[in-house]
Image (cartoon, rainbow, N blue to C red; front, side, top):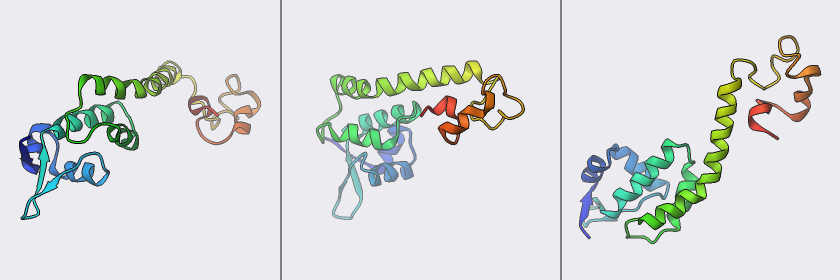
Length: 144
């Protein structure tokens, strides 16, 4: 396997060198060190970074990404089957987020769902400020 310098990986992956260092500190990617203590990466890291960036783009927490990547064999480019397994793990969470965002988009103009406007402006959506008994924050959007 060809080894890539940190600069080569940053350029090919489209990320800053500082992002690579951050991903490495978080355990998302790994490097080897040369005798001169320079980082070297296997080419499989490019696919891993692509997975990380896609996951970040859709809001998957980095810890979930780290756990998913930890289940893959080290030193091998994640395959189509690997990606299918990773994405299946995240599908239910994404479906829930999509439903929540759709609900928010469709009702955003009427109520922010947190109870803060309920005493004077939201008597129909939250009569008697009943949402206050369920806890703090945007109760209609975050659930119990």
